[in-house]
Image (cartoon, rainbow, N blue to C red; front, top):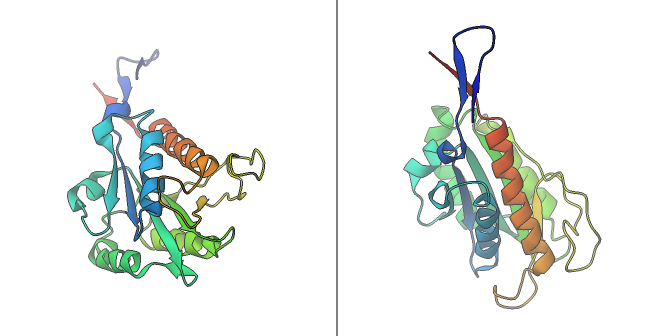
Length: 205
């Protein structure tokens, strides 16, 4: 969007959605967390071009895309009250980026998936949030009031720090259920809108 300054000849230009990008980084052993990551990407693509919102498996990381992305969304299944070993390995692999402050100032968000209604997902979201604070990033939560607590409801687990989803004992095509996947799509759309809205204003002319 371009706007003209009325008091001077200098125009102010704000980067539009085509220059904003989101990477959704996840670890998923059985496909359930991957499905949530892809739903977040689907939501983000309601605001962004397809190439500007991508899901990134921790076993196949495009570091260049992560380094240039405006927002990094981190997600993991919950194992023993923590992120998975695979996701923790990814976290440790970013130590040089932490040291050189490569991600400082970027936006960040998180999601956690477990089999239980609670499953200690809050502990994982807190772990991911602390990780992003170590990197000097800016956290975006999930400002969505629950529509109820049934399987079809949005934010049925009443999480506000980040996205929580639940997977039952079934294939990822069936679980997490509709409400959780719809919440993930809503979250992705919200994240994209947030970083577009808060994109730095650049003076030109």
